Length: 133
Image (spheres, rainbow, N blue to C red):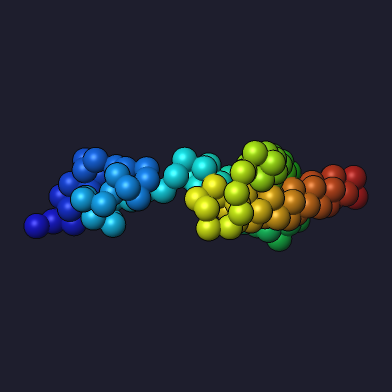
């Protein structure tokens, strides 16, 4: 049996969003609550902003456009992830371990701030390189 077939079978299986729905199906089909998914996606976007910001900051002087495009992408991704994390934290009605995505939202907020800071710093350095260049 190929790996692709196994992955396709898992994707086609019914996905449940609560542990009560998954009781008869097995643990492997539990996707998580929508709140956790929202927080996880926000954290991944913010993490992308951190990675892109770091790469843009590192390559400000080596790229033809001065790393400006990467800095803007990092700034937007960091702000988007951080804003989603802040909104998710504001609307969460439970604490850690309740399935509301509180930890993922807090992580998204922190990573979003770091990504925005790295993107802003890379953007400032790319402008400075343009002026002196």
